[in-house]
Image (cartoon, rainbow, N blue to C red; front, side, top):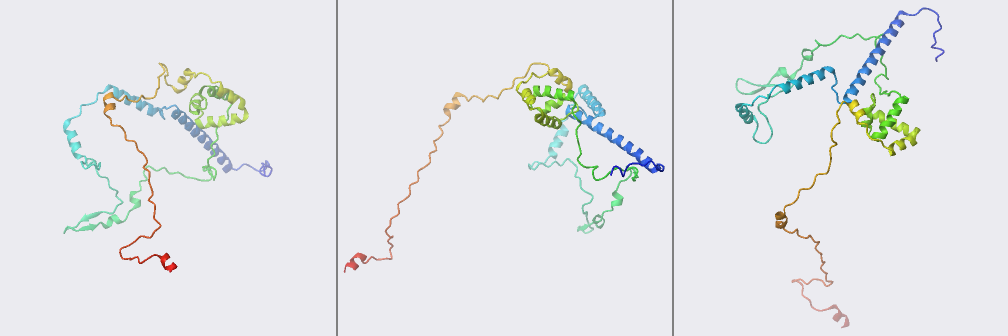
Length: 295
């Protein structure tokens, strides 16, 4: 197939083919820029940074405003009106908020004699009237500009390869944090938790001895590198985490508490059943069967 598709060098190049090649190169460059933006966004989310510079500036401005302005004093009259607007039945209805109804529901109106009449205009919906197309962008698609097929939207995500330097950094982080792939991804820029876990599986098959050595001979955590990569300050004393202690019961309550009754399983005794038939009032015994047989 490659030999059949090879250019023989005869004829002249079509202008349409040159246009398609140029558009395809521009399309690939646009996709590379989009993937770079997505990768940068992933890094920002991994370290907890704002998604964009504008959002970061807006958060800083809001923080400055909150620090400079003092909270105003709340008046007593509006609080009373709001408390009166809340439903007291316990259902949680707030009558101070406006009621929003859909315009696609059937509308009813009151007639001149007080009867309820269905509005005939609300039974039909004019989609062309409600379709807002002012902000739409007119796009012309053709074979020279559209490069999509059945595999364009498929799941073909493949991570980048690990070089020797990144592999050494992975082993160093593995000896510090163990199998905590979230912390390993923090010290490896451009890598997420999933890629670090896949790297561990791959190295476990290739070099299991080194994996076991790093897990068995752990190193102290380099707080300087972790602070530099995450942008957080970990200086200060190490917090002591202990289990909460149970509250002590006062002696007076302990003495006044009644002794808990011992619950014993009662023994159930079955009543022995007699083999003799029960005698009722309407039956009269004349004799026994043995006396009749002997006679």
